Amino acid sequence: MNKFENYCTKFVQSIGSKEGAVSPTIVASASFSYKTPEIAEGIFDGSIKKPLYSRMGNPTTARLESAMVEMDGGIGAVATSSGMGATTLAIMSLVSQGDEIISIGGLFGGTYSLFDETLSRFGIKTTFFDVDEFDAIKNAINDNTKVIFLESVGNPNMRLPDIAKIADIANNAGVALIVDNTITPLSISPLSLGADITVYSTTKIISGNSSALGGCVVFRAINKNVDKFKTARYSFLSKFIKGAGEMALIPNAKKRALRDFGMSANAHASYQTMLGLETLALRLPRIVKNIEIIALELAKNSLHVNHPCLPSHPHHTRYKEAFQYGCGTLLTIDMQTKEKAYSFLRKTKLATITANIGDSRTLALHMASTIYSDFDEKTRKFLGITDGLIRISIGLENPQDIIDDFLNAAK
Ligand SMILES: *Cc1c(COP(=O)(O)O)cnc(C)c1O
Image (cartoon, rainbow, N blue to C red; front, top):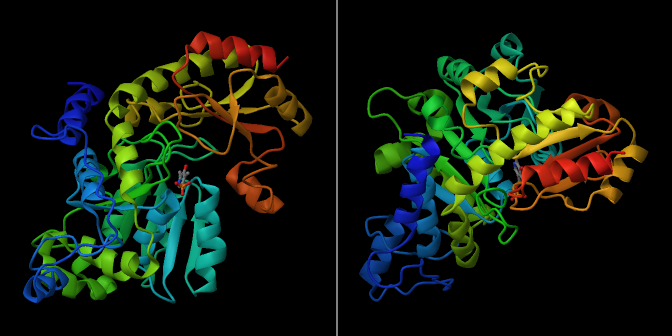
């Protein structure tokens, strides 16, 4: 069965209830009472599975986490207050001062500044690579490398990684691979390709309508026999493996990041996110189809469109072979100059000018003057940010309406 079709059944069935309230219940309480001191002790030592305090987990959020685990085929998940919260949680659960991160592809502006500015202040070094620099990536791995971080689609450079090949490099070296799969939920399943952890901004296509900020981290199981997380590189994990076995990455993330940084999801946002997730498998294939129609037609009309469905794209073959379910909601148009880009944005009647992506509506933004305005020339070049670059996130509209509007706006 087509992957999307399969998830149409899964999501609605796992989010709705067969008894009582059909729609998930919002448990808005920040704290939970334990009834007896013995139960309190059991909840705190983990032997009793009941809510402790909403910073550490909430029943509504747990429902969202289960659906996300089901989507990605992991063993557990932690939902967070935002996508940046998810990336921060995943990274901070694995790194200490003196450790190194290898970052491949992309990169989302917030993630870039987290790695390059913020984490470097705490003695955590990141080196950045293009998706196809396989030898340089291998050579950069050393004893201090704790994380290889990869974006499933370059945002906004639209380069596609060979996820399975990068996972092989990570697995052979015994280093954790985290994939930011925000742009390609469902379409790409990083854990089945050999990644260890996926991170999401659920704010984007998972919620799908700008109604809730949120994020989620999904973890794979620790292997009972041999596992890279059982090696000296991750010695801090051994106590969690002893206590929680194959679930170890979840208590590790909660105790080493969520508890102290507090990037916890709130119940209202988790509820809203589930309403979006319920229809993700219906919305995404339409957008993936729309985006191909729109990219081909705009390119035919001599616009400088960047999307891997175009035969001229350097990763066109990879797109056809490894991204059969599309590469998300983005394409870019290079209008060549800032003036022409601004003119396009002033003239478009359908695109909403905003920094968001992955919405029911088509969205657009000039990159150099907004998200990347305080990035230096060299970094912009590395990230593919040119003066006339507009990032477009295609929505659910009729594709011909978008084509007509864009061709008019580009005049
Ligand atoms: C938006 C985004 C993030 C950050 O998510 P927020 O919910 O805005 O914090 C991270 N990665 C990618 C690829 C994104 O598009």
